[in-house]
Length: 140
Image 1 (cartoon, rainbow, N blue to C red):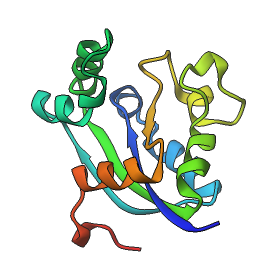
Image 2: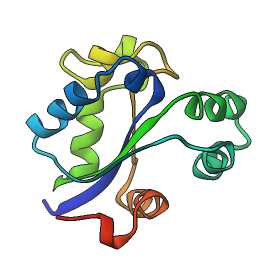
Image 3: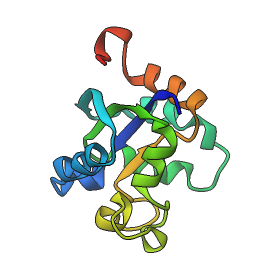
């Protein structure tokens, strides 16, 4: 397995409930290192651009509104097979279907307010990381 980087976003529902540290502990306990991190509030324009891949889907408007509803924590996670490892730690998109011990089982409220976003491939991870971070901000 290769060392990879992936993007993780702790979503507004989780930051509002002040569980950022608990979520990060699960990532770190799962073998991932946080090599970049920032707390920010997305503008509507930024959220639309980031989620443009979903623009034709019926949930797009709700997703954008949700992602601008409060602060998020964007971060770069690094480790062996980081994309796959992160997705396993996050759990199923629907918290009701997520395995015990996963982020979404422990902290997700519903399909939309499911605490975290994670890149779905190494290629998308590279694109998503560049959306939030410059090379100077990612320290391995």
